[in-house]
Every structure is written in structure tokens, then in C-alpha cells.
Length: 465
Image 1 (cartoon, rainbow, N blue to C red):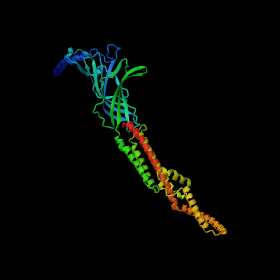
Image 2 (cartoon, helix red, strand yellow; image 1 turned 30 degrees about the vertical axis):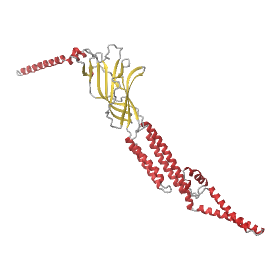
Image 3 (cartoon, rainbow, N blue to C red; image 1 turned 120 degrees about the horizontal axis):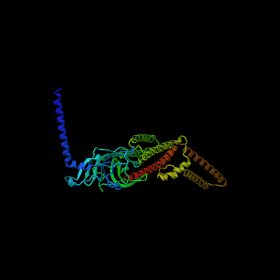
Image 4 (spheres, rainbow, N blue to C red; image 1 turned 135 degrees about the vertical axis):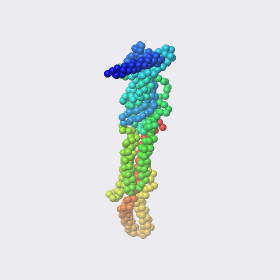
């Protein structure tokens, strides 16, 4: 056991020497300028109370917020994700000193948890602000404290996607205090007229930051007033991607639908073509639905619905024309009222009156009457020239009346045979269908232009063109 005593003596001697070195280091640190200054500032300092000598005096917290990165805009959850450079400053009346007593030191940085800090909070924040661990504050000899830290904020923002994809959004970030009222803490701007987002703002995504507008207000809640500083972030969506992938293909399909009107209506090619367009547009809308915002009803959605309705109307018009052209199978003749309405009213409206290769019912009856009167007149003249006596004149008059009746019967038979001709009936229905086709095409084109012009004006107004 004798060998243990020297060992214990050695250990005790080492500990004693080490303690002396540590004490010397502490003495050196306390004798250093910064060490003496920190000891002077922290002597009797209480970080739990607001740092004012007169409790009736309010503390003014000055803010300077710079938007550094626009991370994301979540339209479905109505969230705005930003990365900020957050600076705040206030006066701590218990943290001032005379620089002459501390080797002309005018500022010092110490851990932030050693001093009082205002509970500045983003009101719209939906989660805890994710700031980097920069836990130091800078204190000047006049008691002015500066705190700098970057901050990742996910804030709630009511997004109006009515004018998608030419929409502007106005999202606000409100900085205020939860615990202190306006009697204790008020907010102000640290720098007046400074840039609130840098020129090299990193926003290479879908959105473009147009402006950041600051505003200072006093807000009342449950009879208590609070000071607040608001930053309105104005952002605009970049629409080129949606123009190329959504609007332009839809316009091409509608142009193809208009071109389809130049196919002859008597065949089934037009109906097949328009059915194919309708199916293609349906598939296009399924793909488009994945790129549209999940909330609200933007104007572009109305535009797509109108295009689908116009394609359906165009298909119905083509089916109607095919039905009219094959009408002779059930109704051999074109009704007189329809024939009169199309030839007298519709044909001049569409500038196709010269296309009509047959006359109206009144013209046909007048033509037959004129021919009958001319034939009767010729027969009468012939009989008058060859009258020999009264008896013969009587017989000739009776013969003329008989010939007139025969002429009328022959005209009726001729008209009946003409109308019974299948080619004549087909030609009549084909002419009627062509005039109706031109009328419906012009109505369709006018309606399409009006809808497109209206939506284009709305988009142009929102886009600021």
C-alpha cells in the first residue's frame, strides 16, 4: 500500500497547479477590456423586464426587412414562403457606458440570450420562424442594440387566382408584438427609403417580385392598441409557360374547328372531323386540369368551358345540316314557308342570293300564269284573224277555252313531274342547307370572336398591357 501515497500526492499536486492556471486565465479575462465591459454591463442586469428607467416611456423598435428569396407560392394551401433578412434595433437604457473608461470601445457583441429582446412576431406566420443560429446582438455605447438574423417565414396569404395566368398577388407580412401594447412598445422603420428587396433577388421560378411596400399602422384588438409594421409584397406570375402550353394549343384547336366549316356538309366527313376535335379537346382538358390552380375558378377555366361549348355547338350544327340534306327521304318537297323564308330573308343576309338556282313559289306561279296568258293571247289572236262568221267564231271561242284548260293541265302535269324528280328535290334541299350553313357559320364566328375578344380584354387589363 506504500506505493499509493506518492501517486495520490502527484494527482493532488496536478489538480492544484491546474486550478491556479485556470484562476490566472479568469483573472486575465476579467482584466481584458471586453471582459471588464461585459462584467460592467451584466452587473445587476435583469433581462426579464423592459429596459427603461421610467416605466411610462415606451420602447421604439425599429425594423428593417429585406426580401432575399421568394421560395414558393402554394395556391392550394394559400401559403407564401419567403426568406428574409430581418434587422431590428432598440435602445436599452441599462446597456450604456463611457468609452473612455474601456479603451474607447464603442460597441460590443454578446450572446442574445443575455439581454432583453422584443417579442417581434410575424402575425401571418403559420409555423415557427426558421432562423439560422445567429445568437449575438451588437450593443453600442449609447445603449442602442442591433439584432441581425435571416429568417424563413411561411405565411398565410389570400391568393386571388381569378385572372390566372396573368394574375398579381398582394401578400402582407405584419410584424408586431404579442405581449406588449402600444403603451409599452411601438414599431418604426430603421431606414427610410431603403430598398426592401435587392436588385439580384433570387426569384428564378414562376413568380416575379414587383414591389415591396412598407406601412406603419396602429391596430386595436379587444380595446387594446398595438403597433404594427406591414410589408406588402406585390408579386406577378410569369405567364409564358401557360400561354405556350395551355392557351396556344386551345386556340389552334378552335382554328381547326373554324376551318372544318369549309368541308362540304352533304358528306359525313365534317361530322367525323368535328367529333375527332371534340375528343381531342376533352383529352387536352384532362391534361390541363393538372396545371390549373386547385382553388377558385379562374377566367381561363371559363375560356376552356366556352371552347368546349362552341365545339359542341359546331358539331350539332353539322349534324343538323346533314339531317336537312337527307330530308327528301321523309319529306319529298321543301315546305313553301321554309323556301320563302330562306330565299327572301336569309339569303340576302349572308350575301348568297345569286347562288339560288330556283325561284320562289310566288315567282313560279306568276311565271306559269304569264306563260298561260301569253299562250291564250296567241290563240285568241290566231282565232280572231281566222274568224269567218259568227258560228265559226263561237266554235273557235269554245276551242280556245278548251285549249286553255288543256294548257293548264299540261302545266300542272309538268310541275308535278318536275317536283317528283328526285334530283330536283335533292337540289332544293342542298341549296337550302348551303344557305343555312353559311348563316350558322357567320353566327358561330361572330359569337366566337365576341367571347375571345372579351376574355382577351379582361386578361389585357389584368396583365397591364
